[in-house]
Image 1 (cartoon, rainbow, N blue to C red):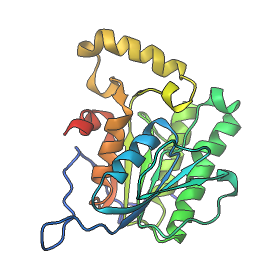
Image 2: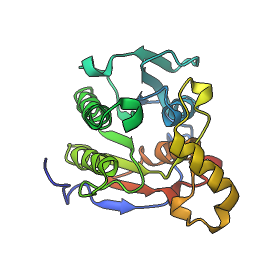
Image 3: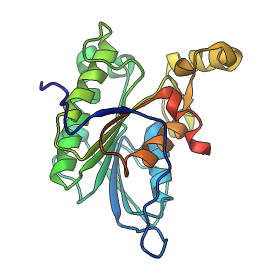
Length: 246
């Protein structure tokens, strides 16, 4: 694997800035075509909803394993077998929110197949479809040299994506996520459920970077940053807190 390049992807750790994509008349230009991988997931669903509501987006291609129970004039849902995915519609941006856990996947190898192999394959398919910008839902502690397998795989994916010829890559590194997985037909993840209860009781004394974060905040931070970013931008969990309400 190639090392994370020093140029053009300079690492910028940033807060979430506002986006202004407008015409000379001050009206949004509805020209962006985007794809969301993992669209039926916790962050993926929030990404789809926010992108559909964005006046600068004309098409939202949702890649999912099942129907979304969501309707919008911009939305094109593609029920896919990610392992067989080879081509994508013509797009400008891709959002990678595909992920699992070792427990759900059944083994470390199966986990890596989803979180690393499939996300990287989708990113390459997006490049071939014209995408020059990408947003990734990674994780707090992602590091290719980590002794923790989960964090190491997340970090290896970050490095692999940073080596691609993208104009912009925005990496979101959230702490444990808050959101209603049951409403999406997903099993509750034990770590998320436990930490959410602890977070509710002790939030004022928990370091900000470790506080649970809503999936909507992560989605809002990515949708705000990806269209205007240059090079490699890393959004740490602290910077994304409250993005959905800003």
